[in-house]
Amino acid sequence: MTETLPKSSGGSLVPNGAAVTTEVKTALAGFLNEFSQFQDDITTRFAKQEERISMLNTKTMTHLRPALSAEVETGAPHKKAMGVYLRTGDDDALRGIELEGKALNTAVNAEGGYLVDPQTAEMIQGVLRGSSSLRAISNVVNVEATSFDVLVDHTDIGAGWADETTTTAETGTPAIERITIPLNELSALPKASQRLLDDTAFDIEGWLASRIADKFSRAEANAFIMGDGIDKPTGVLTHTTVDNDSWSWGNLGYVVTGTAGDFDGTNPADAIVDLVYSLGAQYRSNATFVMNSKTAGAVRKMKDADGRFLWSDGLAAGEPARLMGYPVLIAEDMPDIAADAVAIAFGDFGAGYTIAERPDLRVLRDPFSAKPHVLFYATKRVGGDVSDFAAIKLLKFGTS
Image (cartoon, rainbow, N blue to C red; front, side):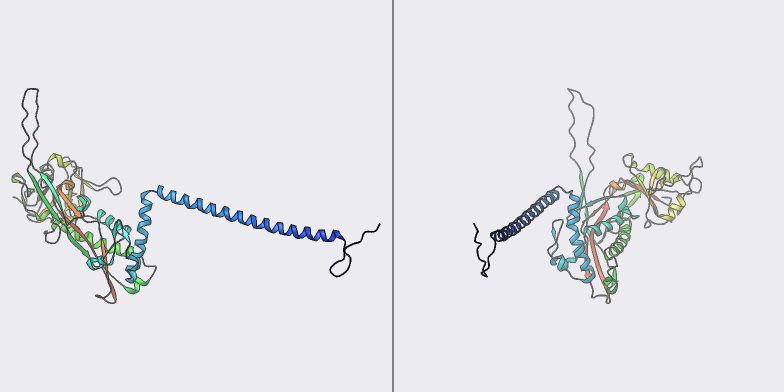
């Protein structure tokens, strides 16, 4: 029996197997297309899930990150903005930035400039600490006020032996004395050409830090020794000096060499020994000699009765020279040896001299006053004064 095949659309006869094959191919192509879309959808979802996990891990690590990293991230925008301001005068990026909780708005500019970024400020502070200045051996405190008060108790608290029946004497009323150290404005005014500032290879922050540190360190070093206390710190040698045998609070005691303008010709080292033991025992363990280079040149030639030099150089790098076992600070602002000059100081300056300062360092850019140069007006507030008159003794090159 013969099967009749269906006609095609053109009227010809087509086998049923061919039609089925076409339908299968079409269905298979549709299935493969849907499966491909399914794969793409799964891949996309996995990618989004991995991104969410990565974001959660980042947030978690941010909370666990040490405080130092947070400070670096916080200071970086300010450092970049400060660099733009120093080069171009554009302070838009500085508006609204907070540094250590302090808003740096434009009102600060009219009052004296913008706060310098922490990295540059620390660079300057590092130079100041390492300079040949009393800052290196004194008590340095940071304050937020306009002055710093040191309270000194002159009362000797009573002590004694007691038993069960003896009445213990009451301690007397403390005699408190207040020493107020006002903070004065220290300023520097370095300048640079605008052409130099336009050079992107020029390290403006490093240059400014070195110039400010140089000016500040020299001004501070002189004021801490010779300052008259008028709009500047009160120097050690500004206070009244008296013979140590008649010393009283508010004055600095001195011992004499016995020869005007020189050491004794027969026993020159005796004056150094007398100076050391004029200082109370409670201060000697932390004491330091302070003198300039010319005086040091004369002292380092001295020998004791057995022919040994009193002066010894430091054995390790960075260790100060020692005189009779005590470190020596070379401060060029100390007087030269001359008649009745107090050219050597000896004492515990950590107890005897206090430096108070505000941690803020501000810079104001002035492109108008010195054209074609740009001036940078840098300011900080610092003060200093003797805080314990018993902790410092002087050597006077005289007879009385």
